[in-house]
Length: 163
Image 1 (cartoon, rainbow, N blue to C red):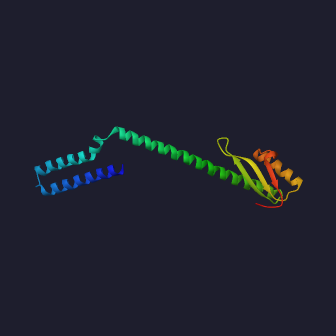
Image 2 (cartoon, rainbow, N blue to C red; image 1 turned 30 degrees about the vertical axis):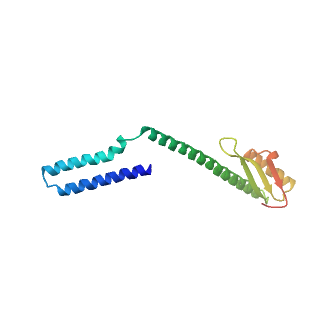
Image 3 (cartoon, helix red, strand yellow; image 1 turned 60 degrees about the horizontal axis):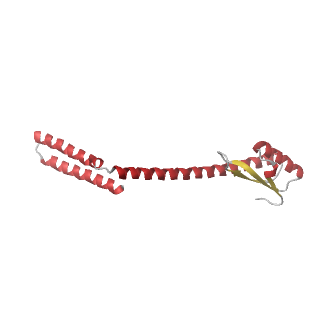
């Protein structure tokens, strides 16, 4: 494809050079006006020539291949966007839960795992790292369930260490 464009530009450039030389060599007056008209027509033919000899089958095939490659690229971008969105949701949800825990006086680290079943990634699992009493754990579990609708069965508490 680039070779065709290169040849087309080369043809236009050569035609323009020949026309410029012919114009500089012709005497002024009617002959020069006829030469300019003829030169303009030659340049127009040089510009439109590839369009007149265009192979429709090859053009259709090239456009189809281009569309398929765009569709593949679009799907890759959508998948990458979804993964980035999942990471952002996990990070911000974890930060929110950790801030909520700190406001309750609980010292812990939080990791959130989002699921991808719906249109958007949604927090599904929460793991809390830290030494929590049973009362603190129950209080935080209620907050997580109220704010994120994550039932206590999908909340995990690991004591004795931080992430």
